Image (cartoon, rainbow, N blue to C red; front, side):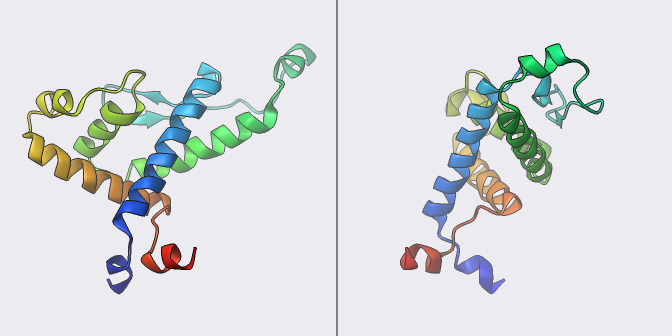
Length: 146
């Protein structure tokens, strides 16, 4: 528990927001068939890959293999951390950060039938939990030594 007291809240929030921006970048730059789909159950389902390139035509069409490998690895890691959140926290993160057009805070609180105060508390908690799950939390001693 001592370790949790030394986490720098502001820097951790910046770090997790950077990860969420990275998610959006991969979402925009990765072909749709490689992206996880967000289902109405607010889960993320990764596509399954059949085991390689099937023809020379496909090989020629895929110019940026490293990008796709990085994206697949990123989505798998993100997905693992994302499922450590509660259903309502996942809904909130998806609506606030991951939808094609993110919603405003007041729209999300209305849709989730919670007060704006509860929304902000839940959002902070969800981001904090996601940062810990993805291991991007920043500790105070790390900030001081930078």
